[in-house]
Length: 255
Image (cartoon, rainbow, N blue to C red; front, side, top):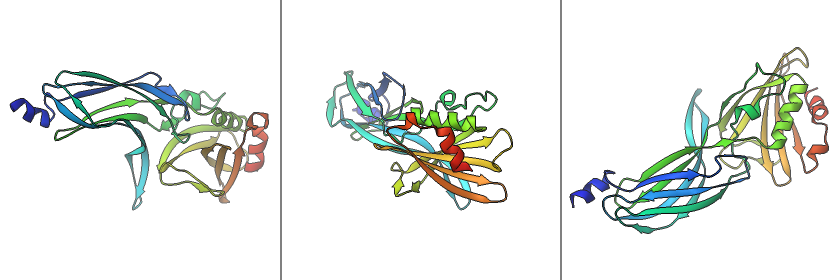
């Protein structure tokens, strides 16, 4: 009985550890691995085993900014099960990452040719493991993911660099991005900020938001110009995006 009471408050209860096969991947790819569960000193009833894809978002309330964890998607790995004391379980999983998953590999997001402009990327992404135990404290685990940008995103960053605009920072904003009857779907969206490395265009900064869809990537550009304020342009990187001169497309959008 004493062991059961201890297990109820998390002492001597079941433990969980998630092992990822491929923690470095791109949005739209499949994350695989195993959830390893180690039974405690007494049998316990497991209500479910979930994996939650998480990120950190920037929120603004009453003019104040703060950062908070945000669930992008929840996956059910296993339903109810009985776990004997000391029992070992290995539950395999394969999870498809949403196309809008924030990207965070700073090296892949750097502007080519501008080594002094390493972007400040605040877009942590991780998998939270939730082992729900009946009448006891849940067991948890957290594993970070290294998310590389889609090839289209890298092409945009390269084209912006050719125009003298370096990628300097990226954040994930809470809320919904909307343009051209397209809107983000995960309760947040990622912004990529670019600043000129030399004079030209009269631009102070450019913020880019990408919303991937099956037909291609919808790109919103928010251009902050000196003396003229903000303006907005949009582009679609469709199936033939590799055959398009994106430097010229962006030059027209920014002109």
